[in-house]
Length: 469
Image 1 (cartoon, rainbow, N blue to C red):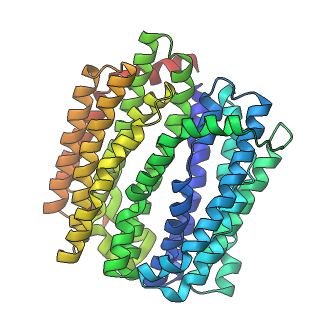
Image 2: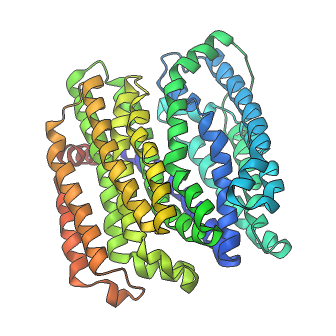
Image 3: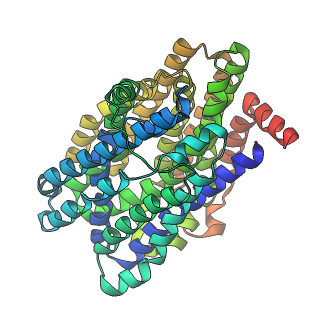
């Protein structure tokens, strides 16, 4: 199992790291304003991708009939319908979206992007079904190779274009490669079935995830839209890069953690003691991901960012630590959502994200009044803290997850994050390695390590997997 976990994490990390490399290369190649425009492409796709997300890939893993070929065909048919609908919606909103951001001259690009959901709708679901049998290889391949292809395409694209169009074409290349590999790695023959009874069942399963998709759009992109509209594309470039650098590792590890824990939680949901132990370890894993991110940013964030992006993005250092703390709290919510999902309570994630979305009007008002991006991050952080508490409480109520083992890890994690924020306020990150590694950074590191050590269920889980190999 540990080998599978390592394969899952490394494969997923490879693909996400390549996407990060792609973004860094494009940021180096084009002006901040052009990178700001390029970052709005991902936001545009998220508008329809997240607003039409029904968790079909998760349903085929957790549903008792998910291994049935007929069910898989119905899920693939539903995915095609979803892709067609998403493409039509995105094409329709392209011009209003461009006007909202004040970049009407690139409205044509948003219309072109509308074809990507249509391509994604043709993916083969075997890569998701095989997770039921702890066979993660097809899914890893389809997540890791397409980003590599898109990165390799940057050199010829840079010769053809010198602006945001590099990102536009690379997105199409990545999408096409993913769909192609999903078919090449499949064991079953691809077929579609429009079984409306199963589609109705999938909709019942997925409507809380659809609601959460609406909320996730606000969580991942709400502040980006606000910053882009009110402060312009150059400011959006810095803000988006800070999000990308801190969000990417948390998404990689959170996705891998869910793929690892969800099957085990699902198979043990009728054994109360085992389920509670796995559930506690899953929540602690979410906390651990966030603390490791904060630790890395506090110790090495400044020099690494300067090395990757150069002086063009030096202003990112002012928001780097607060952004990492905000992302740490956000990823901590995923543990409780995974536990609830194992008992088919898919609304838990939506409840945790609702608080963050409700904070967006406050953030918008703060940007208009002050023009200060840091204030927006602090508002988002406060909302995520409340969201974490809501998520854990709901998981306990709906699944029987014990809260007492989580009190100490949560409290120490909160203390470590507070120490990181205070330290960054008085001693901002530096671009030089020697200047960066002052004694105050190690003070924060101590509290981060103490928080990690307090996670006894996660330690026991990892130790057991090491013994079993």
